[in-house]
Image 1 (cartoon, rainbow, N blue to C red):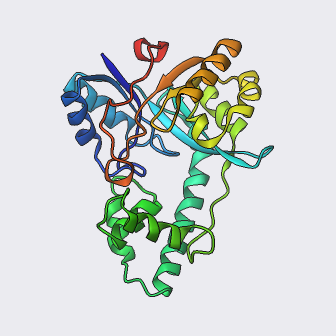
Image 2: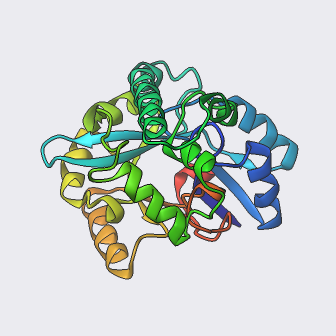
Length: 269
């Protein structure tokens, strides 16, 4: 049976509801799934309840937007099977969410000043049941073009990258604090898509700090990534996970379960 352990929903920067994702999972014969919405554990109780309705094993998850300050690069940490009170994870992520929301409001203002007719009220309404505005929500108000189209990508680059009027980023949390918070909440910490963010040099240090696994299967990973991950996992006794990194309309076209996790203790826990 299939397990997709990297899925996003409307609780962060995915365009589908939890139920819409689970209905697709049924169609694709996915038996285990984890919603790893960015920097929030909101929706996990609802997801577990819906999982029982659809007879799908829903594993509590999160993807924490962190930073490797030693190497000056972003790194994402997946957390699984934490206790649902998630006090330490919430304490770490709530300030991050507030910073992201403030930055998104500033971005909307800059885009409006540049002459684009977008409505904060409409953007805010589109976020529900999530509570934080992401660039994807802003882009949805600017264009109906698909995420992968040249129209979308050119507009995104012109607004949010380099010298764009809404460029810049927020301050992310320290990656070691992210791993620590997950472990303090009795969770399992996994480094997300290291091939995508070039996080390999960090893995030995994170393994010493309590890292439990590496995301091996990901749409952006190559055969070379798989070989390197296998070597690191064996050397540091780390489990292997995987998933689609599904965002529906807010990301590359992919089907739930198209990228599956290797068998691991998460699925059968």
